[in-house]
Image (cartoon, rainbow, N blue to C red):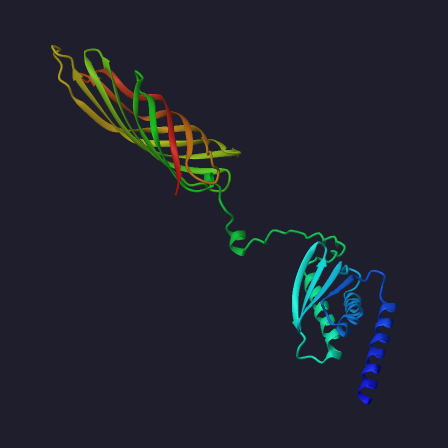
Length: 328
């Protein structure tokens, strides 16, 4: 008799708890469907599940939506839980055989809430309002002490070696000589470029009854003053050269003359103009065109029988050269 009274009291308390839970449920509580469960379990389950889901939703705040539907199906002592939320569906199961009948409804409700919580973790919360990023001032790194004391030099500011060809109009009568030229340039500042050069050329012409051959070597220096605009540099400056020339006469066949040669030093002042182009101002090579004009102050004369002049390295001369320069 006492046992029946106790069981009746428990059922009365569960019914009261269910009524209070249903009265406190929000209007958005999901549908809870219970299938194939015994009456003592099926009766309190919907209220217990809704109560646990309400507690979960209150803890998470209003950023999460409640599930659309909860389905509970009993198969012996195992309960299958199925939750549908936002067109997604997930299932789990719980073995309640080891639990007392009074605790089974609460355990199933908690398992259902855990399943809903795991599903809601994949639903992104509403992003917080964007905060405008502060403008970041981009500053270039300060130059190092080495860069300040030794700033990078452009191509024409570095020493260079130039090689090329040369054509000269030299002597009286003027003879055209062709040869090669090499020059070493070492800039001093932005304006002045001292240059050392060496040239060698040969040529000849026919005079009277002989063929005159000319071979000339010379070396000299030029002080070039220039300006640079973009990749083009223009220079103009004075200079001087000193060299060695050999004149050789070969009489024509049948002429009663004997061929001889003469060698002597020659040289004099000159002026040069130079235009150079660097496709890449920071690197080699550069391409230059030069004009030179001078006057022979140390002449050399070739004579016939010691009296009649055949050819002389004397008077003004002109030269044209084209060269390629490489930084060193």
